[in-house]
Image (cartoon, rainbow, N blue to C red; front, side, top):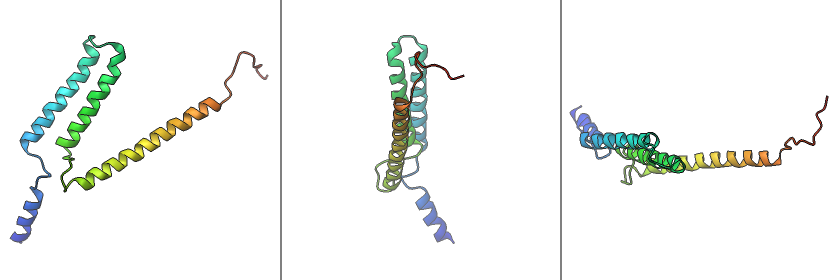
Length: 122
């Protein structure tokens, strides 16, 4: 039974799990990126046209920080399968979102919009 525990412990404490230091670094980076997003909106120093791109950049950066520091996504051999699955999922989501937007746009373009010349039917 002790052989089973030692092999389980060795497999459980491999490089895929983070250390306390890596969790703290991830937490600090997440808080800084959250405050940066909040600051973009609340400071009033960022032009209105750049607010949304700034929030998106900080949001994507925070997503990457959380994937790396908390979910331990990386390019190491033990994580390549998880990374491939995540990238495939993002591809499928992008296809669904872009396809839906394309269908809705074409539907809107091809609909008959009311004009002032149309006479209402009573």
